[in-house]
Image 1 (cartoon, rainbow, N blue to C red):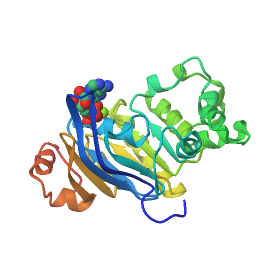
Image 2: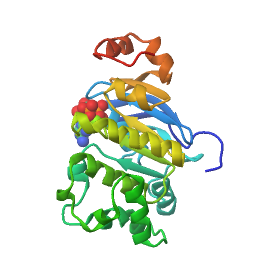
Image 3: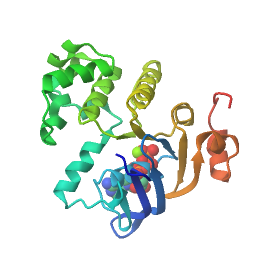
Length: 255
Ligand SMILES: Nc1ncnc2c1ncn2[C@@H]1O[C@H](COP(=O)(O)OP(=O)(O)OP(=O)(O)O)[C@@H](O)[C@H]1O
Ligand SMILES: [Mg+2]
């Protein structure tokens, strides 16, 4: 992406499930190319909903999602294919996000097929497995043969298959054992550095966000109450809700 400005943005977005329940109100959030943005907030604040809108899986009732300078139009199939090459999701639960009946290599190659990307899938899968720290013979095996952390690496390999510019990750380590969480976080960090991939990381864990994200935004009851460089948000929270969130974290690395 050579265009200056944000790669992906929510502009004054509002959303509700049905007419009654309003979940997001006037949300604006931008992700510049290569940026690492953390999105935090309590359970039910609307983090997953915002991610779904940013992925084009739901459509805002107010405002718009802008990708690479143009409003995202989920009915424009060509534009959406370009969008899906550039913006890939990583989900919370690697157990349900991988098809148990498919060898891992086929799962990883699946986006290449569905997005019509013309590369040798075998070579690309081997390269992707290596990038996420798994051996090439993993391609022939099935998800059940891997640990949770390894499955999340496989899911990340699949997300990387189309060479995206941005990963949108919804609580990517919260389903994993504490002991492997940091390894997966370090993997994301390394990929961001080595390949210049940006990411938006949804988490309720401020420790993870402070380790991984240069920018952060705080969502409270569907509104962004704070956003900016992570270091300044965490050291001098401007909003009482953020201060409260911070106070509830047992220990944070010293700023
Ligand atoms: N499919 C749905 N239909 C109706 N309401 C929904 C649906 N999905 C979410 N909601 C509601 O929208 C609000 C925001 O939910 P959302 O899943 O976006 O929160 P979240 O910040 O991701 O929470 P968590 O940290 O628990 O994952 C909640 O009140 C939730 O009950
Ligand atoms: Mg959620």
